[in-house]
Amino acid sequence: MTINLRVRKIKEKIFFTLSYISIAITLIILGSVIFFTFVKGINSWSISFFLSPQRSPLDPNQGIAHAIQGSLLMSFLAAAISTPISILAAIYLSEYASTAFREKAEYILDAMAGIPSIVVGVVSYLLFVLPLGTFSAFAGSMALAIMMFPLMTRASQDAFMRVGREYREAGLAVGLPKWKVSLHIVLYIAKNGVITGFALAFGRIFGETAPLLMTALGSRSFPTDIFAPTSSITLLIYEYSKSPFEIWINIAWGASLFILIMNLAINLVIKFSVGDRRWVI
Amino acid sequence: MKQYKNYFSGEKIWRTICFSSIILIIIVFFMFIISLAWGSARSIYEYGINFLINVNWDPVFHRFGAIPFIYGTLLTSILALILAFPISMGVAIASSELLPKKISMVLDPFVELMAAIPSIVYGMWALFILAPFIREFLGPALKRYLGSIPLFQGPLTGYGYLTASIILFIMILPIISSLSREALKAVPREITEMALAIGATRWEAIRIKIGVAKAGIFGAVILGFARALGETMAVLLVIGNKPIVSISLFSSGATIASVLANEYPEAVSDPIYLSALNELALILLGLSLILNLIFLRIMRRHIGGKM
Image (cartoon, rainbow over all chains, first blue to last red; front, side, top):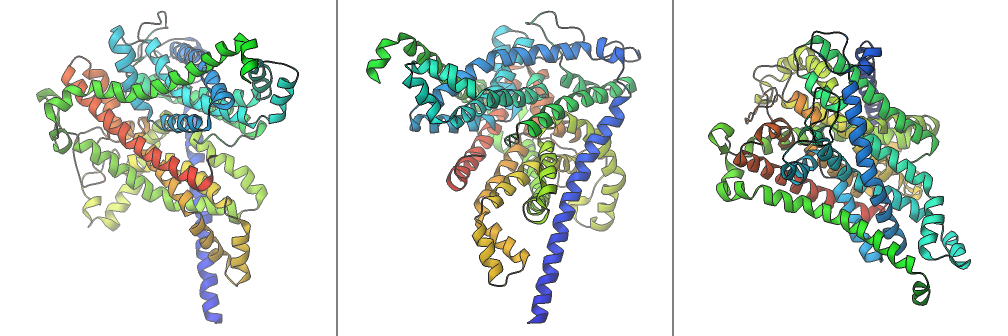
C-alpha cells in the first residue's frame, strides 16, 4: 500500500516536472524569437531606414519607406472596404437574423477564418489580377479585405450580442425604430468590442505575406498607382531574406522587428486594457 | 412589430443593407470554391486522377503530380503535431492546474502572444537562427544517436522537412495549448474534488479531468493540424523547395502552400501550369475546410459555441 502510494507520488512528480519543462521550453522559444529579432533588427534602424526607399544592394543609405507606404496603403484600403460591410453584416446577424440563419452564417464565417492565407491569395489572383491583367495594390487590398471579413464580422457580432436586452427595449420603448436602436444604442454600447476586433484584424493583415505574393507582387519604388505592383514590408522581408547581400539581410531583420513590435503592441494593449481573450483564433 | 415597420421606411432600407452585407460575405466564401474549381478545370480535365498519384512535378515538360506536395504537407504537419501535442498539454496543465493563479495570469497572455506573431517573423528567425542551430547541433546529435533509422540519414543542410516541422510546431503550440487549457478549465470542479476525495493523487485527478475534456482537446489538435497544413511563409523559407519525396527528415522538400507561394508568380504565363497550381490550392482548401468543420462541430457540441 505505501509502496504503491509512493510509486503514484513519484509518477505525479515526474509528470508535474515534465509539465514545468514544457512551460520552460515554450518561454525559451518565445524569448529566442523576440530576442534575436530585436538584437539583429535594432542595428539597422536609422533615419534612412524609415525614410528612404530601396536602393542598390551595396548602398547603406537605404530603407523600407516604400514598403511601409505600400503596407499602409493596402492595409487601410482593405480595412476601409471590409470594416463597414463586416459591421453591417454583424448587425444583421445579431439584430435581425433567425437563429437558423445565424448559425449557418456563423459556420461559414468560422470556416472562412480558417482558410489558409495562401489560398486567399490564389483566389484573389483569379478574381482580381487575371481580369485586370496586372498585379496591383488593389488586388492585394482585396485579398486582405477578404481575410478581414470573417474576423471583423464575428468580433463585432460577439460584441453586439453581449449588449443587454434591456438597452434595446429601452430604445424601442421611447419609440426609436429598430434601425436607430441598432445604430445608436447597440453599436454605441458595443464600440469597444468592435474597436478591439478591428485592431486585432488589422494587426493580422498588416503582418500578412502569403496572399500578397500573387496579388501585390512587390516593387522597388514608392507606390504611385493603385493598379500597379506594390511592395509591402512583409514582401520586402521575404525578398531580402533570400538575397545574398548583407545590407539587405540586415534590413530584412529591421523590417521584421518593425512588424513584430507593431503586432506585439496591438496585442498587449488590447490584452491588458480590454481583457479580451479571443485573439488566438 | 409589422405595423411599426410601416411607419418607418428607413427600417426596410437599413435591414436590406445589413442583409446584403452578410450575403456578400457568404458569396465571397462560395467564390473560393467556384473560382478555384474554374481555375483548375483545365488541369483536372487534362490530368484527371494522375494528378493525385503522379510523383513527378516538372513544369517545363508539363508533368504535374501532386504527391510530393501532399506528402510534404502531411509529413511536416503530422511531425509538428507529434512535437506540439505533449508540450501543449504540459503548458495547458501547468497553467490551469499547477501554477499559482497570479503567475498563470501573466504567463497565459505571453503564450498566446506567440500566436499573434506574424509568420514572416517566424520565417526570418527559422531561416537565420533555427536552421543553423539544426545544422550545427540538433542534426548531428540526431545522426549520432538515431542514425540507424532512415529518417535521420542523408546530407544535412539545415533546410528541409525537419526544420519546417519544428517551426510549424512552434507556430501551432500556442493554439493547441490555449484551447486545451480552456477545455480543461471548463471541466466542473466537482470532478476534481471527487477524485481527490477518494484518494487520487493530484496527477490522477488531472488525468480524470483530461478524460472529461478530451473532446475539446481533440478539437484543439484538429485546429492545430489545420493551421499547420496551411502555414506558408515560415515553411517556405526553410523547407528547401524541391518537389521530391524523401524518407529522410533532413532532405529538402515542399508543401502545397510553399509551392504555391514559390511558383505561382512565375507560372502566370503558362495556363496549364497555373491550372495545376490552382488544383493544388483547391486540394488545400478542401483539406482545411474539412478539418475546420470537424473542429467547429466539436466546439459547438462540447464547449457550447464560444471560443
